Image 1 (spheres, one colour):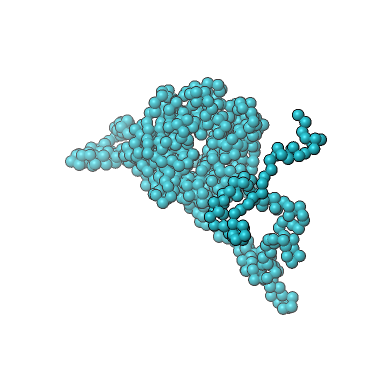
Image 2: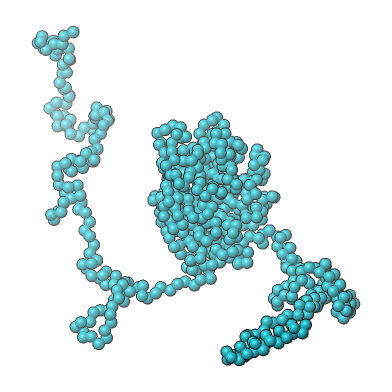
Length: 614
């Protein structure tokens, strides 16, 4: 011990000498020391105090008469020794773990027991789980919004309509003016039938009224276009693509490169994004007599192993994705024959199917017992071949839209409970039909497309995430004045007036000046009608060929029998003679006609060399 102390003294003196020689007093602050036993004791006392307060509040609510006795016992327990207090803390931990563990909660946070009591009535009332307290309206156009699509993250919405436009909406980039950041017509003059993002959200499938589906990237540029088939081949399995109008399309939920389309040529085809020259596989729905039927809607199951199609003869046919010859499940009379089944979707658990029929009905089916529907709701008018239905993210509800005629009410978004199929809620969306509906699982927001060109987004500030909540809080951007100026000028205030140029302020004033200028606002002369005048050639030209072509186009010759056309006026001519007969009334009242020589007499008078040899 003496040697160790001696070495310690030598180290201290050595350190002090080094510090003095280098000009500072020490080598830094000493490390803080913590008394762990005191900290544990403080935490334990805090837990005991919190458990005492919790018990007091419970006793005051439940049993008001025992408050005094409980407070006395609680105060006695607070004055006990360390061993008794630790025992009481163990008992309080057993009774309510959340009350006694850890330091006290900050102000503004209640006990978990109170939160549980508040959440219980919400679970009892399913309507409170529907996020519809707030809404925003996106103006797509003036015609029907026939397609809606949201990427998996919920950051970007895409809408398509009967006006051939596809518009992209970015929730994070929009402000409260709610303007789309891009609008394009990917399929020229064809109505948009379906829009859907892939499982990764990097590409978009566009299905329009033509026979070739397109795949666009997130910015709207084309990635691939399906090939068109040969319409003169009878067997559709031998063609490379569709030959008639498309009805619907969707992506594979697991394989990001595969998608499916169905068409009026009676086929359902799967495609690969990397191979646009030929389809991947083909499925041909057949009627009970083995004839071709048209699939009006199609969908993958949630695991991607099944392909289902709703057909025009009212049947629902389901194939195994790897076996395209025979159906795995088949329901013959799912909906009324001759009506278009507008939507077919799988539930999130993969066991049920919901179908929206053209016979104004909504039905659910169990795949394991596919003969009869589980539930049916009727009296839901549908005027569009793409009226939607979808399941809620928790599989508790089923929603669909209804159609109305112009001026006869408002279209509604109806909510049905999946088990009982009772209509528990409805939303009046607009004074037009509700065509498309979508309930995004990540955002917990509901989108609806209407027949008058609106796309509505319903959300709840507390239950919904991101999406519409991001853009409603942003104020409208003010247009910068620098952007309004067409040309930058160098302003020299002390320049001579003869060198001063008029300062251009905005494009609007310049346009008004141009309108007053007779040269700039001169209206072009219309094309000359007729042969031409003033040295200008007429619309049909001055050549003989153009004149003949014009007369050929205007030729209105009568190809009927001329004899019948003349005899039609014979009786009227005899009763009321006007031209020839009145001139010969006195000189020749009786009409004398020339005698008609027969052909036989003429042949007899002919010479022999003209006679026909038999």
